[in-house]
Length: 293
Image (cartoon, one colour):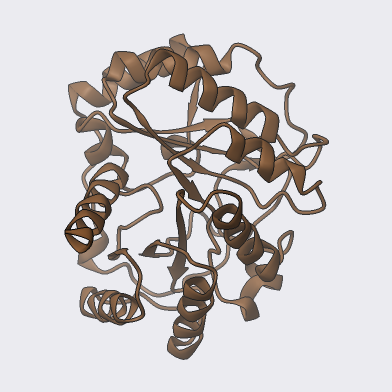
């Protein structure tokens, strides 16, 4: 077993802000991917008043080898969730909200209609908030699922490729690499103004050249923002960590990704898809404004 290096150690969440958000989430019957996926940044993010909401329940229909979210038969969709989520956003005082979900292969539209309802409810109650969604792949669902979501007008469309194609069978067996890539490409085709975003984990057994090929595939699909983080094994039953990439290696990946043309790149051992999402989006807007000027 590979020992965890010092740069991956984080403090346990103890702040008053963290405790306050926990209480509010329980009161409004809301879930966060921060908790369900055991994110190492939960303490720092919640202290800053930032959280990533997880809609459509706490149980996923997929069994990805890297993920700590529960799998099984999901509960019925909570019709009050869109309103409660909008209330939580107002109470926390968020200006940028990230919304993700479990996979819901049991639903005819994979949950696309619920995503659209959440987005519309947020826009109606909090029109100044920018909305980032991190969706499932909607594999084997109608193409109209993506159209439904895009019609609601998210500011950022995010879907993670997670790893290199060679490792999909062992790491992400319920998904297909090119299905995910095409989803991101189509989002940009449906709405050319939407910002597209995707992320990968390293440490699963991938090779450097494979990562660079994924970057090329992403750029070919028009993806604007890339996140790269270290895979951390949630439990002994999950996929083992094959390597801990150093901070210097993450810096190199960031440099190479920027050279390939990504608008913004967040790369580091503790980076996750929603890591400082508001700051990354703001920086991208500033960068685009500077180019136009």
